[in-house]
Length: 588
Image (cartoon, rainbow, N blue to C red; front, side, top):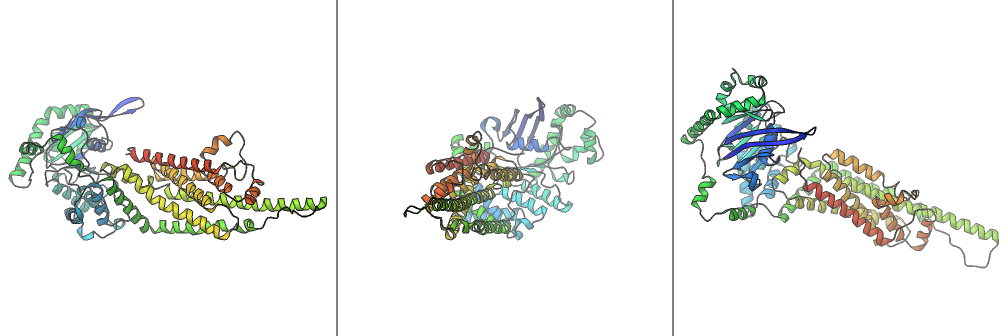
């Protein structure tokens, strides 16, 4: 049984406490199908999230099978299923792949045979067997709702919470979903709670919970609903609610609730007598049969049901690679960037490849000849030094742009799915490791190809491995920082915009083109990854080219070791921000 005892969920609004759920009390037996209805803004979804543990109750307590959730902790991920309003499947996957990923992330199975058996069972339960190979993006609204249910049923939850799963569907699809939820409540004593705006098909529910301004106004059978509110038809219930204060409705319900709960119990017993509702032994009955079972043993047994960190990491990484390879637009964009950016750099190579004249060591020349020689050497240094410095900075900025493109939308673009999967037991560490591994592959491919391709068309010499190292580091720094931004932002648009601004400031604030004012440089330089990669790469050049570059820049160059360690700090800070954002709950 699920029981709420004077549960409140309170927020602060204009400095005052506001109860979005106000002293809600109700009892829901096993094998029960309940609808949560009420006017818009009455607290339906808020109550559902409070039951799920997403909203911590401010007062009161929740009980699940004689267990106080308010004191003993939330339900385990496999005990509860939560189907939100949004789609929780990636569009690029097939139905079968989406369910398989959900199973691998939530349940520790013994081999592929058990995994396939569970997937096939869920497909059959939700009526998706015939379209198992169909991509998610071609599914209808009703089919996507079924898929969302299937992805929750992989763990056999005893409590299934559904938030507006019938909204936006045609009448036939809506009835099919309600009928499916009804059938699911008849199996294994499962409780199914469904938030809905629709007042159709209420006869399929065992009970109806009517909320008014966060308070329970009614919880009884569908056939008694109109009688309780003294109306002729269900559609008149909401106008009737508005005629009386919410607190009066709550007090009235508390006064008459006994009679209506007895009707719920009577109907439930009739279902059991007719064989329409089969209930497995309750937790208390099971414990009585097995005296050796205790809380510690149960906790240890439960913990083995969740896959390990490595298993979740492998599933998440495999899914990310699959999504990337099937996203044709993203693949084309990455290939275009990979090919075009190095070509853009090489367009400026001829100026950097010109020979630089040196001062002669021959007999003394006339003053005029010495002046002409000095002017020629200086002109060559200016020309080549400017080109070499520009090419290096161009590489650095383009790789920074690649890093931004790599990561700006990586987490924010799937924020809702991430939050849902964390609720289902996905570890933030496994999720973040899968992202880092995927992005690391992009970083290495982009940076190595940029360095090798440009090296093929330029003749200025230096320590190639040093230069390559700094190109990898600047790409990694910008990727990790933008991943941190993506992780902290709630929307992909916010993350993309901030990342673009960040890259845009790299060139002007690097000091590679114009030296920054003395008062500004110490403040901005520590945050500009492009400066440290450019400075480290320039310092690794051979003497002539380094001398040439010094003739065209006013900015002081930092040592190679300093550049290396500062970029590592940038990478570390980006990863820390990514961890904070990925771990922090960010439900709407």
